[in-house]
Image (cartoon, rainbow, N blue to C red):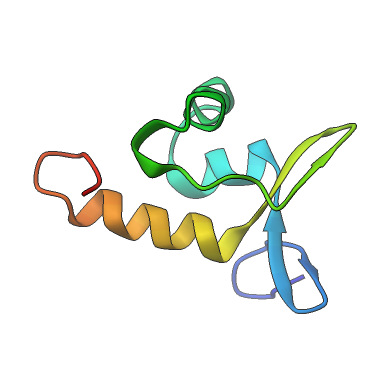
Length: 77
């Protein structure tokens, strides 16, 4: 687990499920599910689909989040 973020790592890759993505982005878990299922605003696909749900490479979530925050109207380019 990355000490500074509290995000678990697998082979040095930070990973997270819906709860971790929601916590990091400030969205609710249902909203993260909506972003994922509708591929809204360029939201990244999960790195894997497990029985417990999708798992994201959090580096991709961070890139998406940076683009979201940089967009003046709140939408990704």
